[in-house]
Image (tube, rainbow, N blue to C red; front, side, top):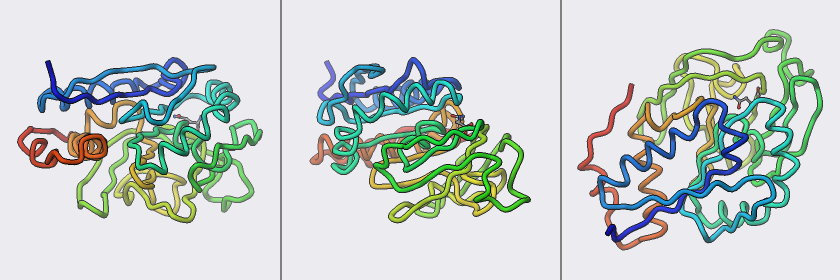
Length: 244
Ligand code: GLN
């Protein structure tokens, strides 16, 4: 039996999983099991209680505008516990729609604006917003993307497809600087967000399978919070990871 456990919550995994975001769980499990850590998985969806102290890692995936609007109605019920989790250094990966909903506001393609739960300070406008310069409007941001993480110097690779344009707010830094592709808004060269142990990104699907270095970093954060006396960095350094 494994001595250690990583408890994963997949927020709205039955709604916000359009691009196979669940693959991020599989990637973390792949690395965790190699260092003797057992992974448990809980789907936390509409009407369920999210309890902050029950989890070591949370995945909040992306979705199309309809699924995102359904999720947005339920999310305020979980906002207090989610905020407690995040402020208490909980590890979380939010992809695309999930990333948008953790911020202040989100504007859908049809122009309707909803409140995010504002546990973080970014906001998102739609592709035709008057907040955007003329040359930034009108098209979805689709294609391969490569970014450089400024803390580690690592490059991350992915694929983006979003209409929303996100602008980071106070206290937030980008996951990376855009080398090629569009990123948060196609203009300021930021992609994604880092806030405490929260990583947000527009990279579709299993970002962690393509970026093993980021998977190991997130795993180290999550396990160090739960088991602070263990040198997880050292254990993870022994595992081969791939980036492609
Ligand atoms: N519906 C959102 C948008 O188009 C998010 C899309 C996504 O999660 N890929 O901006």
